[in-house]
Image (cartoon, rainbow, N blue to C red; front, top):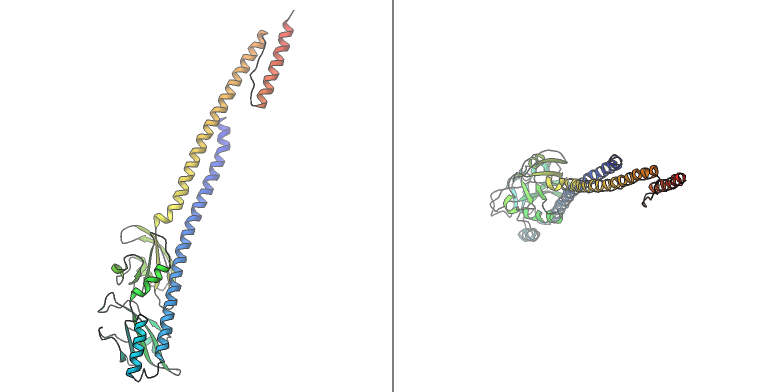
Length: 337
């Protein structure tokens, strides 16, 4: 009986294990897909933010009288830029000399670092990474060409605080415990979902900094974070800025569905095994009593005594019991004189 129960239960337990394992892996893949989706959403929001900034600067660059350094026009342009969150605005000629400069509080900003060579070469815009300035936590800069018809005659550069990028991370709606960040091409943090005031302007940790300095457009990797905890990282690179959007998930969160289903599988297996053992013992006990009664009936038949078999819930045992009673009755009559 125990072997029969084992033959029936083992395939069932194997089926439960396979289903649980596949479910756990599916849940893990769902988390991985969510991680990539959040990184991609941040990348898209970075592109949109840079595109809006470029569009605004393009609009300012065509202001009449700007290149002529008309004081009224310059003041209006600078005021409009400050209303949009710009900390500094500079108009460079093609030799890299400032024509309009609102950077009095800052040290001189080199035009080459702001992307003058790229703009002169025909680039539609140039985005720097984190630039350390007198004001903390520094700025990032966006530059656009100033054109006279189809000819580039100057470059306009606007400086923005990294705090402008923080809402992008909040809009990504990463689950609790996840880490999101924006890293520039030099591997410096421009925005971070947690403790931004502490880490913005600091080099990103480990592989994400290496990835930011590379050329890959996206990637996945595993490593330990600053606190020594194992995490699963992914990144997507922005096309307009070259920055990367990083998403880190603690490995324990990624592995949790697998362990959770493994525990459920173990509990189900134990419950089914115990139930099988109880059922096997009950059935075996019932059969054992039936066999003993058949033995007693056989002795009664041999002695010529009346045979009385108890009722059974098992049809086969009822048939055997009926046959034994009939046989006993026939034997008892045959012995009468």
